[in-house]
Length: 365
Image (cartoon, rainbow, N blue to C red; front, side, top):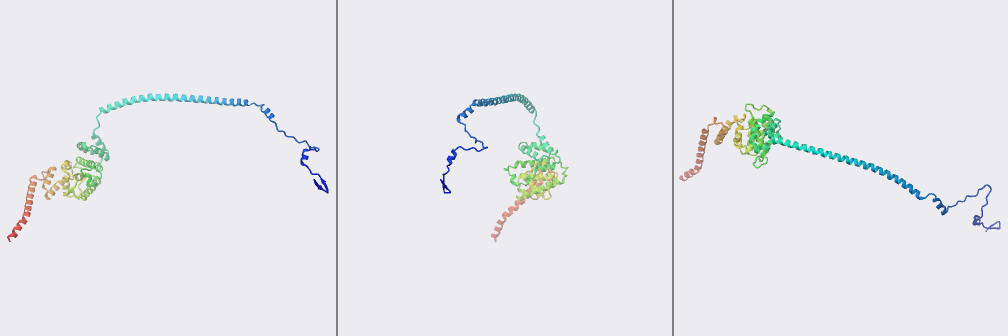
């Protein structure tokens, strides 16, 4: 309770006011009362749309999808069957064609084999002629390298004539031999693996001499200069390794053939040529050397130089090797040799007896 103006006023009870019905004023509408549906009402409302109808709709849609898939699958299967049939047909046709082609090839091979068997192989000289005509230096060297061991004599017969087919035989020969002469003397030793290659170069030079016409010397000055430079370099290398008289036989033979083919440089003396002839075994290449327009005029001078050095036997050997007996008498050479030998013997005897005579004279005094 509250006190107002000295009087007690009863307290207001909210709950009492809420429980009392509200008095409508004029013009006001009654408030709307919201109600919550009960469980029985929900059940009745749902029963108006049964669940099996929805399942039927779902089954209908699924059936339509299955039918569409089945139709596409059947179409795809038809295409696959068509492709398989086409592949099988194509493979069969190719197999038949291959069998026919193989049969034809077998017949062709048999025919070709019979034709080859009936034909003789092309002669080797044709290959040599072709390489020379083309001036194929590497090809000619390769061919000769593979045949020099068992066909050397045949190559000597074929190559001189074949070299004439080259447009510039002298240039072609220089290209064939290359610069092998710059290699040391070990390349000419008997156990060197380079011996066959060196033999090829020497054989080409020898065949060029056999082809060469002594009455038609080389016209090209550039070829002469190149060959002379090669000869000088060759000799210089041999001199640096010792001397010409101690050269390897193949080394000496190569240099002798080179200067006989293209000319003897002015720096070469008669004794240089004599040493080259002795060391080269010139008897093996005498036929080629006797065709040289450069070496033949030097033969007499070489023999004279050897006689002056007291090498009468070697000089006599050269006389018979190169067939110049008409210029040098064998009997004269032998007589000179015997006379010189006797004089040498007398000198040696006197030299040996000189100490004994001196000793006797000393004792007599």
